[in-house]
View 1 (cartoon, rainbow, N blue to C red):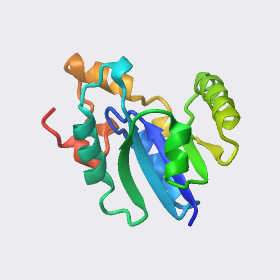
View 2: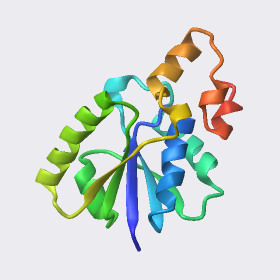
View 3: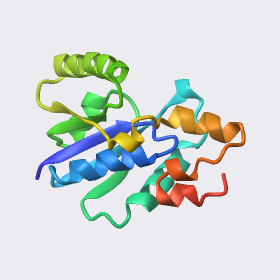
View 4: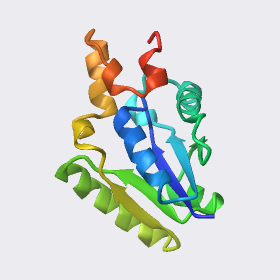
Amino acid sequence: MRTVIYPGSFDPLTNGHLDVLLRATKLFDRAVIAIARSDGKQPLFTMEERLELVRETVQGLPNVEADTFDGLLVDYVQRRSAQAVLRGLRAVSDFEFEFQLALMKRKLNENFETIFMMPKDTYTFLSSRIVKEIARLGGVVRAALAPRLASSPR
């Protein structure tokens, strides 16, 4: 079974994340959204809330599951017996950062690949950070969020 791990803080899960995930489900037998502890980012949602929101969003997708992890991603990938890590790219600046991370992951463990995917062009401007900032300033963010989150009272 070909498994891909899609790591991130997903605080919150956006339509851009969901688009990349749905594209990956066509290439892999199983996709795991791996929610990372994001202590340095001051998350809006707790780890438990993010896990529940992601689970509710993907519950109708038969080959997708949500999980959490702490520590090195390469260790988590090995524990889950995955063949690849999925990362979304929106812009050139994303590529530079993600490329460095992919090379470091390869140095730590050569047994899996990093796959880069781009979301639909309509989602290239989306990031969880921007969505949170708009929400904090009272803006409407429903169109940017996965369906379950768009109806959330937060």
